[in-house]
Each structure stands twice: as structure tokens, then as C-alpha cells.
Image (cartoon, rainbow, N blue to C red; front, side, top):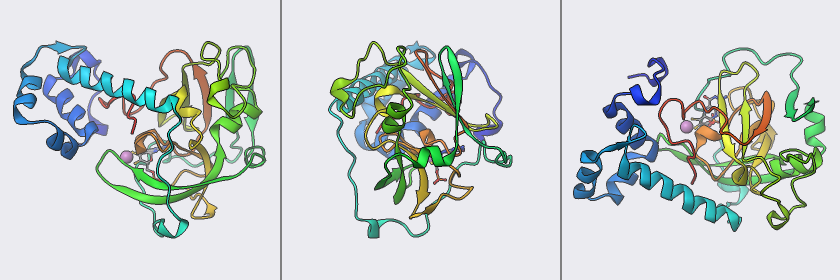
Length: 271
Ligand SMILES: Nc1nc2c(c(=O)[nH]1)N[C@H]1C(S)=C(S)[C@@H](COP(=O)(O)O)O[C@H]1N2
Ligand SMILES: [Mo]
């Protein structure tokens, strides 16, 4: 069945079997098969529901989120590779928000509380220090590929333009130790210019030093399919969170809406 064509039901009304299938898909079948003995699987499938999702499975997800958050507080870096290890022909997947032409007057819109939104050009973005990242990009559909991305750190971008805080100050100078959790918004939202695709990212992952606003792939400007002119590369998240063709960025304490979370995937989707 094509999940894109499924009617949009509130979570409570999604049939239990569909929720379970989607949750399993979001984990990856082989992960689950390898990690969960049959008895445990039956315990999960026969237990009462919580939030429309089987209680033990919900607990597993919450626990994973806790572990991932602890992980980020230590700013652990994902494994990187030499440039030669990167795929010559990177895979392409997902065209939501890319089916309309890129607006000719594209600018990156960044919303700020109580101030005019920023409207930035690629030159504004490229003025920040360029970073390269060669790492194993992972899609929840079960494939992964070593890819070579270039761009600027989202954390550098937020520091330069004083974004993501309630005070309107820069989030911190380079070190997560200097971040003030009370001042930071909890989430970053991003969407394509036509709003056809959108993601929500927790602030810890957004500020991670390997999270990039990427504008190059294999040393060349990113093409349309891969998200020109600039996309999110967030190596501690599955592919779905790596939004292509960013139109708008905003910050909030409530979870921004998220395309695949609305279609039954785990919201956090951390690696
Ligand atoms: N705008 C937009 N971004 C998107 C998607 C999409 O459908 N639309 N798909 C996501 C998914 S599921 C994956 S795996 C990656 C794939 O990125 P790639 O096409 O550069 O390989 O993009 C992500 N970002
Ligand atoms: Mo994906």
C-alpha cells in the first residue's frame, strides 16, 4: 500500500495493525527480528494500548529517546570516512516538497520571535566556515550509503544570526557546555518553500557539531533531486529528517509538525 495515499486519521483512529506495522517499519524489520525474541514480540502484541500504541513498544521508544539524549549531551561524533570511500553516484529518495519548481526569488526564511524574519541568500550562508562530512547516510527503508557532504554547521549559523534562543542571544560559543538549556527553544522546525515536506528536530541534535546546512555533494553544488540550494544533513537522524530544499526555519518549545511522524513513524528517529 502506498502510505502517501492513506487518508489522514488522528492517531487514535488509525487501526492498531497499521500503527504496529508502521512502528515496525520505522525501526527496521531486521533490527527488531535480531533484537526481540518471539516471546517478547508476543508480549508486545498482546498488551494493552497506550496513546494508540502498544504499551511496551511505546516504552521501548521512550527509552531509546532517553539513551539518545544522553548520548548527545556528550557530543559523540558519528564515524567518518576518507573522501575516496564516498559513493560516486549517491542514491536519491523522496520528492515531497520538490515537485514544484524552486522559487526564482528563493531566500532562506528564518523566523525570529518578536522580530522580522531573516531572509538570507546562499552567499550569506556560504560566508560561514565550510565543513565537510563523509559518513554513512541511513534511510529507515533499510539502505545506507557513505556520502560526502559540504556545508556549514547549523550551530555556527545559529550563533552568527543569534537564533534558537528566547533571549535573542547566540546559543553559545562552540561548546555545548556554554548552552543555556532554559534559554534555548526545545525544537527546530524546517519546511520546503511549498510546505510539501516538513520536519521537527530536537535542539540537541540541531546543535550537534556534525549537523550541517549542506550545499555541496561530492564537492559540487547539490542538484535539485538532492535538495538544492541547501538542505539539512543531520547524521544522528535517519534520512527522513534530512530535509531537502529548505525554505523556512523556525524555533519553538512545542514539537513542530513532522511529515513522517504524522504518517505513523517515531517522531525522534535518532541513530
Ligand atoms: N524535501 C524532502 N526532503 C526529504 C525527503 C522528501 O521526500 N522531501 N525524503 C527524505 C528521505 S526519506 C531520505 S532517505 C532522504 C534522501 O536524500 P537523498 O535523496 O539526497 O538521498 O531525504 C529526506 N529528505
Ligand atoms: Mo528515507
